[in-house]
Amino acid sequence: MLTKSQIEEIKEILKSSYNFDLNLIAFEYGADLEEIKKLKKEAEVANKAHEENEVDRIIEQGKKALLMEKIKKLEKIKRMKTKYEEQIRPKKPTYTIVRRKLNSEQEKFVEELIKVTEQLVKENENNSNIERRKIANQVIANVQRIIKLKCDLAPEQNARLWHILDSKLFERIQLYDENDKIYQYLRRIKRMVSKDLGDSIVDAKTEANEDIEKLQALHDLITDKMSKEDYLNLSVLKNKLNAQINSIKSKRRQKELKNKVPEDIKEIIEQLAEGTIDVTNVETIIGEIVKQREKKPSQSRFNITDSDEKKVIMFQITKIFERTSL
Image (cartoon, rainbow, N blue to C red; front, side, top):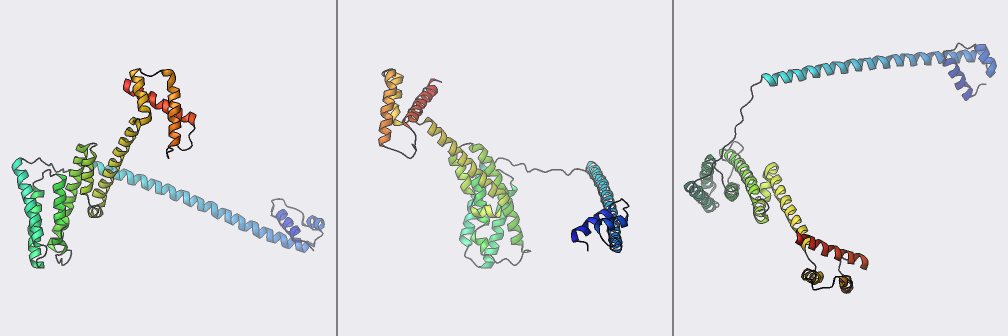
């Protein structure tokens, strides 16, 4: 009786393209001829299935290749069509709001109107809902009058307008639904004020240059609520201001550290500059400074050796003389 491994060997032989004599195979393995014939049929069935699968695979690959080619042609036609449409499509005109500087009378008018509106809001926050709605319409009208001037307001003024529209007067109004006119006007006007506030801060930011106090004042104008409501504009701007302030502070700190002269080497530098110290004694004096520093260890010393610290002091003295000689 054939073993499992022998059966597998015979199947592999019969699957090959060579036409082996079945009698010879039966004799070689000491098997019954009928058993070999049975294995021959199994091998033929397996070969046929493999060939059919291979044909199906080749056909499938061909179909995919044709489909990809068709897709590429369609995409090319689409790109050509889009390009043609862009060429013949009339370009939409772009509109930019040209803002103008206010003269002294207009500045007084705007400032007075903002003050009056702020007072109007404050005095009517606790009135009835009907009264608050009437006042809200008046407040929105006042802010609209300022916006229609298309003028350059200071960032502080734009911030005040934003706070007027975000006051308790509007918080306490009973809005009926999104079709409520006050609700619609408030959203539109507030969005316009936010845009103007951002633009005015950007302009002031450029003028401030590296004045940290001015930049910090601009940064503080943008409240957390403003950032949350206008994330893509005011929130990003607030982060940029913060990054700019930190960068300026970092540069100034580095400059201070670079120019800072340790107290214990000031005397040596002054004496060297005046020529009242023997140059040959400088190394001895530096050695004494190192010993004094050892008695008062600081966190900045780490595990620095005496030799390295002497080199650091000599480097500081050399650099100071280089700067002063320029």
